[in-house]
Image (cartoon, rainbow, N blue to C red):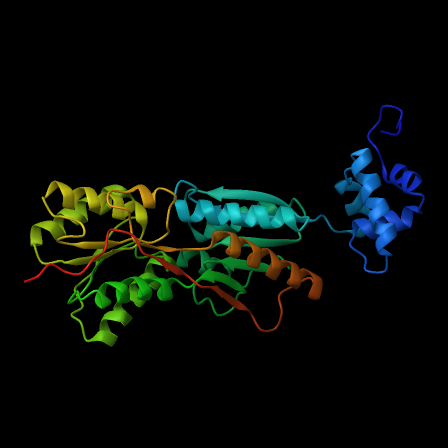
Amino acid sequence: MPATNGRSPVMADVARLAGVSHQTVSRVLNGHPNVKAETRTRVEMAIGELGYRRNSSARALVTRRTSVIGVVAFDPTLYGPASTLGGIERAARASGYFLSVVTLQTVTRQAVREAMDYLAQQSVEGYIVVAPLRTVVDGLVDLPYGRPVVAVEGGEAPDLPVVCVDQPGGAYLATRHLLDLGHRTVHHITGPSDWLEAEGRVAGWRLALEEAGAPVHEPLSGDWRPRAGYELGRRLADGNEATAIFVANDQMALGALRALGEAGVRVPGDVSVVGFDDVPEAEFFAPPLTTVAQDFNEVGQRSIALLVSLLEASGGPGAQPIRDVVPARLITRQSTANPPAS
């Protein structure tokens, strides 16, 4: 490696080794199109040989851009929010952006505003808010920060750019799958009522039943945790009516499977169960769980791409908010089957 007198290499060292100007190195680093392929390759090889790393603070002084995106996230103990945050982080790194993350345990409008105030002090260029609760979405309207905001899992928020998984579509696929197997109806264990994802899954479940002319039983309200699935699964087992259950997430489905097993109810021999999320453990449940998969990496990539497009367009949100919907996918395993013969 060429000598740099014991200090970290700087852009001038890259230019000297590659035999180009300082400006040419800058153009390569910033992805400028007007650089010959041969020159770009030579600069990239020099960067690799020297182990050069861009000084983001110095760059910010010159360009007045920090390349930092502020993220407000919620309850990383839950699979969905944690995976969404992971997808955003990977996409940001691949796009050359840094993240400053605030994770909230208490979700109130005031808490969201305070988190964004904190991020504003760090000179973030824009915000991504993982907004699965209606309270959060309502708190994002008419923000005074003058920076673009993308709401992830923001449902039908009319005044904000949104990237979300097709929650109603995924729930529809799950319910339709059970009806197509011959079940007369499908019972539903929901997530918390203030979560937009839970709301969307209820809507998709209800639509599939109504289209089929199937009975629509009152859904049972859970809280995303296995304990709730266990308790509500016991209630359904005791009622001895359900032959098919759509559970709003895999963690509650795990609890429901245990409750049904303890009650002597065979899955899928007596009752079929479908979850939502496709957690890594789902294929190892007993039986392996049929579930709906969400592509969290795609959500992350689209969220970053949308925010970057807003930053590059005008530094602020466009006149017409964008809603980018990522499809959900049904994963069929051994927890579903035809209903028992009557």
